[in-house]
Length: 521
Image (cartoon, rainbow, N blue to C red; front, side, top):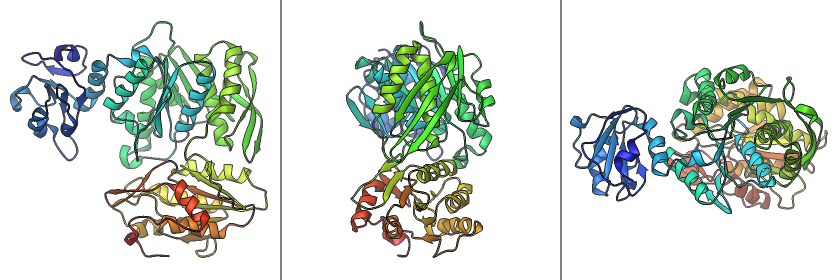
């Protein structure tokens, strides 16, 4: 396409190029990744200014540049256009390059602090059971037809250009629906700009990411912006705009306000009055049984391999969204029954690790106070009343510091034994992080060396947790889940909690790198 065509519907366009040119490669804000014939997006960043890299991008073959400075303020030998906000422009530019793929799909966005990945995976499975050709983009992976792609190590929502590329591949593969996990970072950083959503769903809003958003209200409003995007984005023929809201969440009314303008707003809840509720819930160590109760007398008994009350809420969120997309009651009932029963395990979410030991071993991604609370509650339902829960977890460096003490307090209240350890300390002192968490344990009456321990090396911590376990107990490693690395300093070292727990169970613990970060315990 021509550069002028790429710019035709771009919001915030301040200055047009003085000439046109053909664009034959994608848009990129990484000068080192620009392809010949592509467009380089230059913007001011927190630590660098992309306008200083225009020459490098052109040398690599950039056919045109979009930037935030005026044309008179840059030296650019190729066509140059000015926009008011480069970050906001990347998504629409990428969408235009790929032919606006989200306009050719029914797009569902799921946001919230906890449960996003599981809810997305549940909905993906339900829609597949109904015969829909549906793709999935989550922080774990992207599923496009029969292909599964890794979306990264420590990741949020994929970048705006990657997001449009994934959606374009879905269109090329003949898919009709896309389920997208949408994080608060992704919304605040414009990573889903240019995506025309049809349905927005909320899991919950709890304490997290205040280091990035500044205040809890700003964090909440970042998530709520998905609902405004859904209500105001381009409409598709015959596709209603809808919102799905957790009525149990204290912010439910705020999300209803942000969703004003959708055609349908549905609620689900475990406790509050709602359109969709759970009845006859029973928990077993390896499954949950419940009846999904909805409008017009809908009653669907289902079984899921997911455990714990929080996963009942995730099931309800997915079922409520599915009711919009599958309006025929018979089709919906059949899809819920099959989709929930056959959904594959979500990597790193209450994932069992079995090396023949005589106690349960679980890996879970719980890295927020609310998620840890829910994971430990679920763990308690999986064992006999006289057995113990042993929790191994940490708290990340350069992130919301308030949650360190909160998580330690929750661990001490709900687990019988707590092992505090590394979880991405980054450039902070790991010993200092663990000291803050130890104070949280002590505040709940925990005595170090009896009820809780500090073991900085995560591999040794998992092995120590295993040594505490008795037959019938449950050991749960929280905080890392599916992630494939651990950050010390500014380096991401390979790390997989599932493999590390397997090694600990076998008696050959893996050691966290670098071991010099803290003294051996």
